[in-house]
Image (cartoon, rainbow, N blue to C red):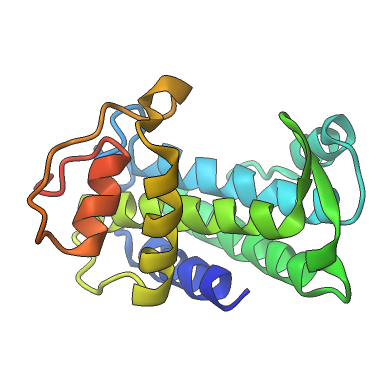
Length: 193
């Protein structure tokens, strides 16, 4: 849970650091600009509370679609940052509830232990936190313990490009920093930007 919270805070810091003119900037995640990337993170976090509280995937999806906000003030960035803060708090509260980490959730692949689900969400935060930091020029590093844990998990998955969610791994030197090795496994060029 501590790595999840640290990685989620790192994303929060990056979301709030995006300037209004950066929301349409490209990211290392080639399919999304900054706003679309943050929108993806919002949607992923939106599922956590309904799933952890026992809803099936279809019902959780209905809750998520019913809770999405339409822009009302302050431009794209202000709305996305506000929505991120709300869903991040709900996800953290759900995972922090008594006994939550001992439950299972229904994902598209079937029942999944919450501990595995939270590890996968942490991986999403770290990889997309790196994407967001590179796209916006955010200078601070991601939390080292979370990066190490996600890298260890990613190494066991091998070439993730077959999932359709990642490009082919990018070669990096053996002595590259762990974050570079991780994002390279996820099909990103650590020199991006």
